Image (cartoon, rainbow, N blue to C red; front, side, top):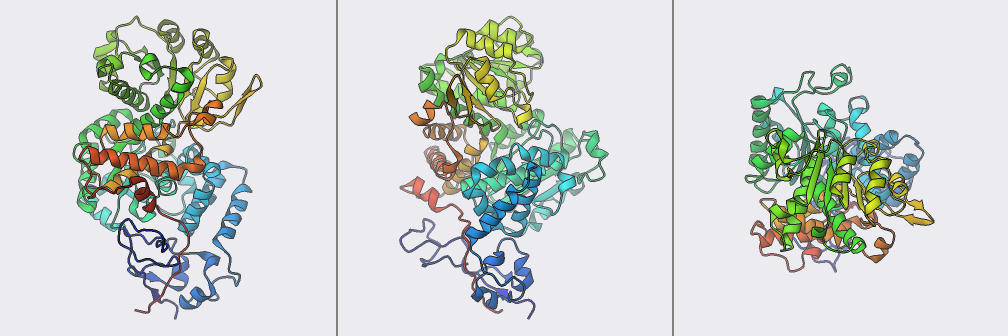
Length: 591
């Protein structure tokens, strides 16, 4: 028989996963104890060739002899039965054979379309090696060439043509228990600008990391691209561009489509679906977050996620500099979503320490934008999100003049402009400060304000450095420094996990403060000895579990959690909820 069906036993959160061993308590109380992983009965899945083409259940050559007979696979696979571990080795061997990072990206993401569990096994077990491939910096190039490398659609594509039909589109998605959505309109992809629908690579990549790093089940995630056109002429003229060939819509037309989407999401998936706004341009990012943060479970990773991870790095640096955050003066080069987001969470943290009001805390922070230092004299022409940081001061037309005038102890780059922390700027801050903190946070690597080597060279080894893009260790004057990467991947997976395990209905700013403090707590003396402000990604799932627990605890404290009663051990609860990519044994039943 060419096509038979197998059934699965009960499914937890709509996604079959490894059932707990006999000595492990199922925190959800929804599974029976069994000795080995068994795929539950609940969902109808094709056998035979259709099974091999289903990435959620396909195991390739790892199907056992018994499974091959039960599910009509005999003869459809080579006779050798291999372990998942050997499959991982083969995938890595093939990926490493490519020299071009984009070719590696294509190879790894193709695996996700063939064998989902193997994809996550490879990624989880080799996260430090593959993170720069599946996400920044390589995902930037992948988005630029998304139409050229496009193979199979992933996620939902909602365009202006679909106005009035968004709820119907969500119903087309096969999974009904969606818990995390990442949505972009493609207008500000990393530091690369307006990539239109080709920005879909970002939601796809982010949600892969929600699963790999935060343990969110793949079937409960949904990448979405909102296509309102693009203003990038090279894309409109590219025959392989996959989006609408029109200039970007704005105003009422734009707002109505976004509102229909947000309303449909809540109608389709309920109050507790988490929506992450990703790579929206400044003029939309702040107002959309403000508009929906009181009615939906939403956050903007470019504003709040970036802010939380940067704050964690600043807190981690304090044992090296001495004193408290309030003792420092901060200068930001770049006053967009990332810069003002970090400034705001920093102000909140300083004010929560009890000695300063929020207004006083903000006075310790200065911004430099494309027109120079943000000052009171420019107040009437400033965007709203910059106004809290417009202080009384003489104008400074560029970064170096601002450093000379203000004498900051912390320099943070969020400009998206490569090479802007010049030799002169770095030498200047090192001329009066023993241990200046220098964060070059823009990515991809080509947009970083400076390299790690330049930072240590021009400050003569004085600086405490972190970057948004990955850099290898730097040796200066006989001492080797490990470069911590201020990567949002430390924060958003744990934030998502915390919201899910608590059943949160809103995201509060205090939940990001809790996440930042939890991340900073992972930095120990051995890290500080190397001036490493962020931990290794090899422990990221444990870090995400701890951040998830901290976020959930804050949600319970604020009365925003709905999963009651509160678990006694939130860390253990978070870990028990995390997805495992280990293969499961499939059982069959003829229908």
